[in-house]
Length: 128
Image 1 (tube, rainbow, N blue to C red):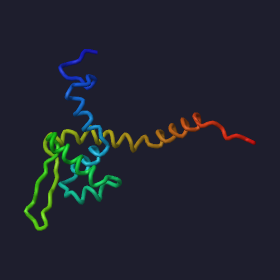
Image 2 (tube, rainbow, N blue to C red):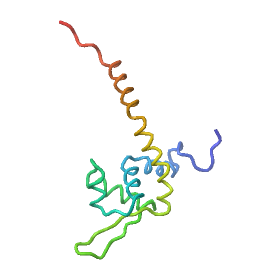
Image 3 (tube, one colour):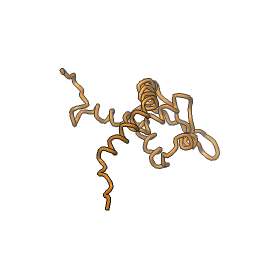
Image 4 (cartoon, helix red, strand yellow):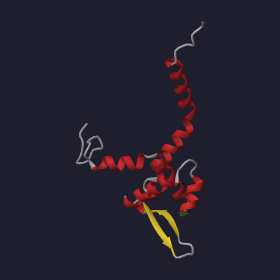
């Protein structure tokens, strides 16, 4: 297959970093929520079960650095920050929604395949 100037298959290509960013599970969940509306940090943390404070901070900083999320400090007491998608971030909504939809539509098949794999690989219990 002919490849252009950029290819994620080349280890030093900057597109590899972009793919790593958008392929992360937290990225898909953060982008999905921010597509609905602007959120404050605490709202995001409460809405995404299982994400740690540290991981949410790292994810938001990375998304902001890559130009996908806008961080807007508010002059409130105590200070608060709101996050929203940039125009570039909004271009990710469709592709990530398709992946989330696929996961939800095929989870039972994935679980059945995992169970079958485990049964195949697990030796039978010894009968003494």
